[in-house]
Length: 469
Image (cartoon, rainbow, N blue to C red; front, side, top):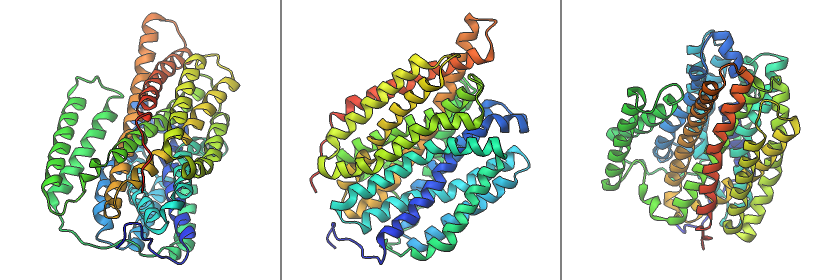
């Protein structure tokens, strides 16, 4: 079959839309609880380091499950996998809405993440199969919009819900949307994947689960433990060794669970790096700003959400525009613009994040920052995937999505770690400082991380070449 041949479906746009809405709800759920973390801490009497597991636990599950998805796509039909994904998502949302304690709430988040972990790679794989390459820019632009807007808009919507109702209604909202999608959207899904049914390699699944799971666990444990402690160091070493063994095994197998030869394609490798950096930036900011706005500036959840809304709105506006520009200009001009804007946004955050910062200054910084994100995710992802041959789409999609989840977990964990480190440094020198001052100092310190990462992204963006298909 010609690698550029499109799989014919009756309504490709509607089919892609159903998957995009499912992914949007899942990624919305990823960060929506961030605005309610302080409320959950009070209700269940837990610390900031414990409550962050509602975000990192979600990411941990995605990091473990997404690599397996490339294998599942080759074994089960598209419709069966979408059905399973929606059932997991519905069940997780229902348990979360009714959760009587923190442990049950965490289990609900893990079940939710199983649904999202199936939907994300499916979305990318299906889009690559049902749209011709000359129309991918616009469609992938909309997909990039889903990936970036959903985590960004989550805290805004959740903030209003938390103030007007209760954090459990975040789950009720997700449940209602998933049920509508299951009832009305599932009939639009058609089977498009080629089922090769490769041999099940239990050892590969074991190594993948242990490797990615312990790596994300280690990163998440950094929030309340020093790097040299056993709870951080041992899982980190185990994770790196397991991923190394997993990599060696995949390269030697005739039918690997995850085909790592995708990294022989330089633009895919560079595109995945930029995706990784993009998700680091999104998730670290998505957890830092709500905590700062509520704990330091003492805004309500709704007001904090509204401050973040224009940044999300700009990101949404630029998404489709960037998609069209990509088809005309390619990634070489767009990516440097994106990383320049996130660099400027990070500098603005460092200059403005204080205990007496104005409403407008934080809003402006966030608008500049998230405008940049719109120019990063889609061009990086599309250019990278365009270089892969058709038979590697599922593997490339699974790898890109796995690394995004690891980036999310790392971004969340590092952001919280630096926030707490910045707070303790400030309190050592200012013994009588208020909580508001220490949280502001900690947040300010953490934004140096987004600045460094943005600069790395900016430098590497100049090595990108447009893929000739």
